Length: 158
Image (cartoon, rainbow, N blue to C red):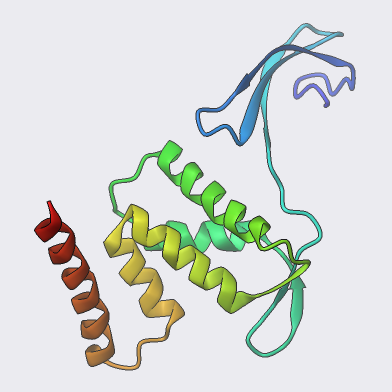
């Protein structure tokens, strides 16, 4: 790891701590040349995963696409940075649990919707409306009614 100040490649780890979600590590480092201290974060990365798009084309897994899509659906919604990181890690954990080297984009979309539904119903509807390409207001209304029925059933069981 290069020092961001003097670009020296010799740095030492002064402290390491697991994040609250347990899927990343924050390391405090010190440059051995100029003694500058800085922090780095290490995260789990899905390696060698190919995504099969709906048109049959294949492309390498890109975490940033998921981050952008989920972030857009959660725009102006009450979620913390830590909550967002946990959500993304949960999505990636479910993708990894498939234990496949090639995964269809529709499977990934379903995983995202499942995880979003647990965290924020409005974000779930936003994502689903784009992902499922709701054709009309009727389809949108049907999905909303499903959520309302589930909520009423949960409240009735209490």
